[in-house]
Each structure stands twice: as structure tokens, then as C-alpha cells.
Length: 616
Image (cartoon, rainbow, N blue to C red; front, side):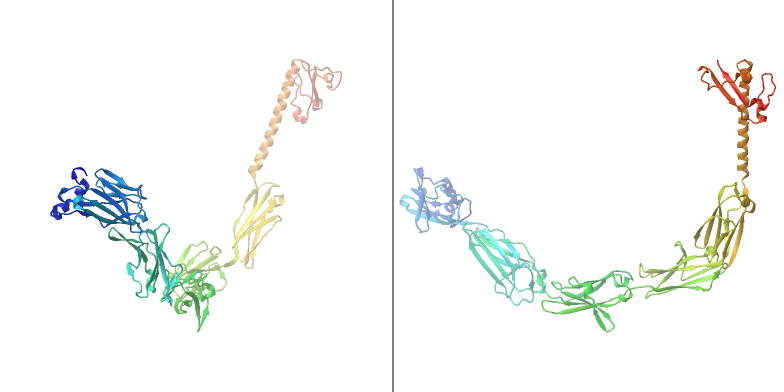
């Protein structure tokens, strides 16, 4: 450097030394870091700091690297006149800073070597120092893979737990294993850790490790992970894998057998499931048995032995009893069993007693009593056939019986402690008696020759028969104790005179009623009125026609006598003449209304034919 001055960068680097340590130094001294770490692909900067007594200037600065044969290869030669770079493999990646520090870009694994700085200071001699360039690559996060399948606690050999792999690191890291956060050590408590280091073609390392360790029942909840360790800038760093669980096989220690739903609520007709559960892994093989007296019946064919479920459909009281679940561990062939009692609540033997039990007649009374059997308390209700509640309790008293009382009654038996458990029993109360006609179509207004329906309704038990005193088409309708008969007949003179008789009978008696037929006077009067109106209209028409003829005769338009009669069918008649022949169909008394021109009445014989000549 001209004027004997040190570079600014070097002076700053040595500031502390000049103030504290080097004030009394009398020779050339050079200081370089022993190690410079740089990540693969990064840029390394190596500094060369020196001190020349009396503030003298350097003569030259040379940078070297040490090759594989331990030979120094120069990279740069720096003098006061300038910087000369030697032609080496590093030429494209090297640079020199203003403070004469060496920078190497795009560092590769092959750049991990020794770099030297040599300083010449004339009379103060030559000094040199070196730095070891360390290239590193942070490993990838380790990947852990637990062993597939399961691991039995009864394994005679230490089983494999998991494998751990970390790739693309430099230099090679190491792997440790942990269970529930606690490190496992090789050769302790039968733990074995096997590790392998592989250098890839890229020069990076892949490290894999396999953990072998015994397992216990408690390890079903354990979590394992591996950690890869590496050094960076003088500090130990670590990367953890994810935590995994393993499938531990262990025999069952406890067994439970329960009824779903609760056995206290099971009733006839329910579907019941017996669930057997064991705390072993994998679940053992289940077998089911039902106790019959002193023997056990195998009901496993009705169950799902793999899942420990026995389903009973539409249970009844014979389904009650003690059930046993038994397990077999296929690993050590150990057995455990558990029992449960199934109680099926039921109602049976529902029956109704009628007092008296003899035939009931109208006016009698009867007591209905209901009873049933069940292992639980029962409640009774009586309802009618429409479902209406009549009374609480197991007895129903009916008095003053009539045909209308005859009906179906239902005794409803319920178990309040078992929701949904109930049964019903129906009983029919039949009241016997001779027929009683309750409705008849009398009196009935009719017309001669009219087709009519005669109706007769009765109530009786036993069922009666209906007879009519006249012939016709009969239709019967029966509803319990009620019977209705409709008879279709044509009204005759004899029927009007005698009427009809409805006769209803059964083995207990006969009832009869007469149907009176009356002529419908209103209809007859209406018919006569129509006839009178028709006669009056006819008379008026004839009168008007007579007046017209008389008027024409007075005007001389109509010649009298037969001389004026012409046949309009004759061919010689003129087409412009219209001759109208009027023939009278009137009775002699009606014809007398026609008068001649002199006002005298003409004989009916003379009025049988008239001709009107319409010429104008």
C-alpha cells in the first residue's frame, strides 16, 4: 500500500489488538479465524488481519489454498502496484475485498480445505496464517415410520419399533430415539439402536436408524420419535420427527357383559343386544352361552363372535336367564368370562270373567272382571269399542242392560314400571230379547201405480228375520243387533186399501207393525188442475178462430155453401190461390159455438167441413 499505510479494513480489524495487546509488539503478526463455516452453495469470506511494527507497509500479500497432496497453490498476489490473480479452478468464484479479505462464492463440498494468507513486510520479515473452510448442509427433518402390524408383549425377541431417516446433510449427523420424551440409550434395558450412514453421489449423507425395544401393555399409549443432531457454528442443533404410536398386542385382563337396553326395562317383543367387551388387543374371540337348569347352551351361532355382540330378536319370557360371555386370547390361549342376568318383563294370561255368565236380558246387570299375570305390578283400565276410557281398575259394572248396551269392551293391562308393556283383552256383552221395531215408514203418502220403498227397522238379539205381508223386492242391512229391511213394490188399489205389515221375529218373540198408505191429495189436485187448464185453452182457441171466420164472412171474403169448396190438389187450380180446408174435431157442444152470418147457431153436421178461400 502506498505511503506505508495499512488498508482501512485491516486497521479496524486490529483496533482492539493495537490498543490492548499489541502496543509493545515489535514484529509482524498475522491473525485469521481458525474455522470459517459456510452453508453449501453460499459465499465464504475469509479475513487476513496483520500488524507491522512502526506503522510500516506490507510488501506483498499472497493467498493460497492447500490441495489434496498438501501442496500450496497461490490464488492472489497483492503488491503496492496492484492485484494479480493466478489461473486456478477457483478463478471464476474468487474475489478480493478492499480489506484484502478473500471471498469464495457458490461453495461446494470440495471447497472444504485450508486457505492461507502470507504477508511480506520487508525488514520485518514474512508472516503467514491459515483458516479451515468448513462446508455444511443442514439435514432434512427426519422421517419416522412405525412398524406395520402389531407388536406382542409376549415376543421372545426384542421387536422392531420404528425406522428413522434423515437425508441430504453434511457432514453426517447422528440420530437419537425417544419414548414419551425420554431418550432411549443403546444396550440399556434390552434397547438396541442400529444406525447406518450412506454418502450419496452428491457427497451429502443419508443417515438411517432402527429402534428395537421391548414393549409392555402400558406402551399402547406411548409415543415415539427420533431426533437428528448436527453441529453448526460451534453449537449442537437438533430436528425432531413427528411422534407416532405403535400397535401393541396384549391379552385381555378385564371383561364386561351388558344388556342394551338396560335389563330392567326389557319387555316382550323387544330386540335385545348383549355386548361383551374386553380390554385386550386385538379383541379376543368371543363365545356366548345361556344357562338352562344345570347346563349351558351354546348360543354363539346367534352372535357375531368377532365383535362380541349377541342379538336377540322379539324376546319373550323364555329369553330370560343367565348369559355368559367367554373370551379366548389367541396369543397366550388365556380365557376369562363374565355373566349377566336378562329379565324379560311380560304380561300373560289376560282373561275377563263375566258375572253372571248366563244369558243377559234387557234390564239385567253384569260385572266384568279382568286379571293377568306378570312379574311386575299391573294397572287396569276399561274402554269402550271407540277407545273411550270408562273406568280405572280391573272391574266394570254395567246395569239396566238394553240392546243399545250390547257392545265390545276392552280391558287394557299396563305395567307402569316398564314403559310400553301392555296388553288388551276384548269381551262382547250381548243382551238378548225379542225384536223391537224402532222405525217404520208409516203413514206413507203415495200415488196409484207409483213404485215405492217401504222401510222397517228393528233391534234384537239373537239376529231376527223380517217378513212382509205383501210381495216385493226386499233388501236387508244388518249392523250388530240392528236390522233394516227395505221392500220395493208398486202401488195397487189393493195395497192402498190394506196397507203393509212388517213382521220381525226371533226365538224369543215377534214384533209387528202396520204401514198405512194414503193417497197423495196434493198430487191429484195438481193433475186435475192441469186438465182444466188444457180444456180452457182449447175453448179459447176455438172461440178466436170462430171470431176470425165471422169477421171475414161479414166482409164478403168467404162464400158460404159447398159451392165455394175447392180441392187445392187439382192441377187446374191457380197457383196464386191458396185454399185451406178446416176440419173440426170439436164435440157437438163445442161446435155450437160457431155461428152463421145471421147470428144463428148451425148444426154440428153442417160444421164438419169448412173451406176458406184466400184469394186476396
